[in-house]
Length: 402
Image (cartoon, rainbow, N blue to C red; front, side, top):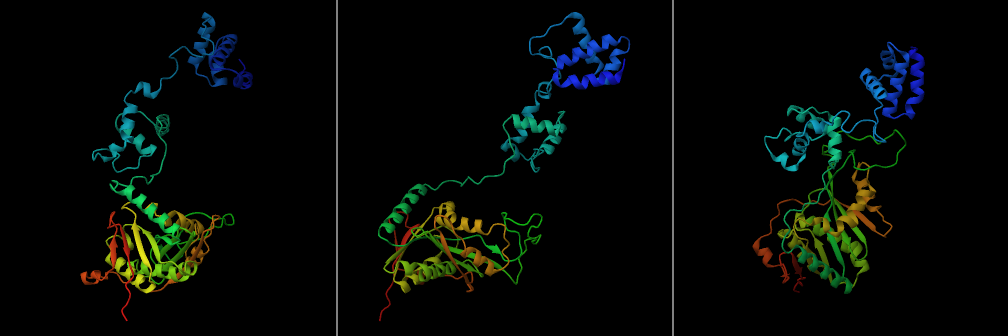
């Protein structure tokens, strides 16, 4: 037979033929060619000689299959999971979160991608490839996913009640036209030509070149942004410190906010409500924080009320998603090469909702480890609220005697 002619005919017909139709066509071509026809058709089409012989038997016997079928039920190569009934069970055992805690697990200290999974399954006696592992995982509803921060640990029994209490205090102060602020420290930033998360538009193929390693440059130091966010006016103040994140730094940032932003718009204010986290420089147990607020109250004549968010709920602090998140968006992908750049980027943060931010550099020194004695604490004019007085308290100004 002419192999070239047969090959040309097959290339023309194959796209339009089903598996069974191709088999029967190859069988009729082989029978028409006579002796050596099976070998010739196999060379021309690439089919296995056994497939052509099966087609010949179907032609000879008039074997009929159900409409739409190319094989008898159960025909074709068996799936690996059918031949190896324990494969799926062992694969799911490796993927289960509880398996990672087993010290004897072969994947205890290995990233669970398809290659290590396939290698481990092969070591358990399974015949499996990484492609098949990927297909089995997808069919079982698995996908490649990153970690998601959702677990806050055991919820404090007074958590919801404290949230409601804070909301009540905020509404009360806003109704009385008294300032309400949210305070916190933003993540400390290394100053220098370091990579900053995010992307920005640049000429194609010309990314900003930055340092490979994020090691502190001693002569440039780090920036410590402490923010004050006015919940009523949607305005923020940020002091960028260069020393330490202490309660004195936090209190002086509040003082600067009051002098530059708070007092000019609320000259008749008699009190300020401060919402803060439960830890850090403005934590519930930090004596220096209360002492410094007392000094601020004495100098301004303001009554300062503090409501702390319950432990582990700092992300609910309004400053996090109404100020800090927009600052991070504004400077994404831009190296923070100097303190001046940091101050400019923070100060230029704007939103369509009207957020405006002012920022100044604070070159003051704020040493750690400053202790407040019991005698000093006794001079505080501090009133604990009836509900959770450790989280909610008011500091009243002390008038100096003439």
